[in-house]
Image (cartoon, rainbow, N blue to C red):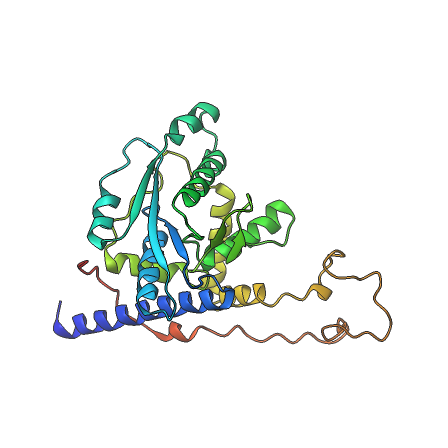
Length: 303
């Protein structure tokens, strides 16, 4: 690689890294995800998202005006072919506190789920219970997951199309057992940026299909739909995510969320009803960073 290409690659990587850190910091601040004295348990799967999450949180730990601890947890579910050495070697190199939890959930799932059926639902429930237990044992105050903006959007459409609910994946919410606060610091980060960053950093990715189960077919359909929308209408995904942060209950149809029955004449709520007017919609603004016609970032050595 020529010197100019190397310089361009380094520049683009630096820009990408700063963007991910800035967006994570913004999400953490907007939702008050991390507080003084927190002990954050990062669930490290070996995929691009959780590696990026750990990388970003370690940086923020160094520069944040508050003090908090970060440690990593990996659940070894005893899937055939799982490369047990990869994560310990990587984490030892970082010098970070971590724990590998060994639980043979693979055998349980295979015993309970008929051949050819999707195992993800049972596997997820088992994994969640083990992670909650581990968080308690390790004294974690927050559980950090690597879900990103695209995961949140996909989940909203999955709930709309297949669950009949206008419900997404929250950036911060109490766990279903009421004992653990779950946070998603990458909530504002795009999957494409995370994928590019993981490649550039040469994270030792562990494949997610070791169990032989296929990705949820419904999620695949939604992901493909959104990808096509983004391809044919650039900026639509940004607009969808913005809409998730600008909910207007009076203009939906949930009587529990807004008291339609007791609405009185003279009460103009959120601009009132303008259905008879010609609708005016702005073209979705492209993200400022999209102007980068950057060269592809090459993997770099981890130090």
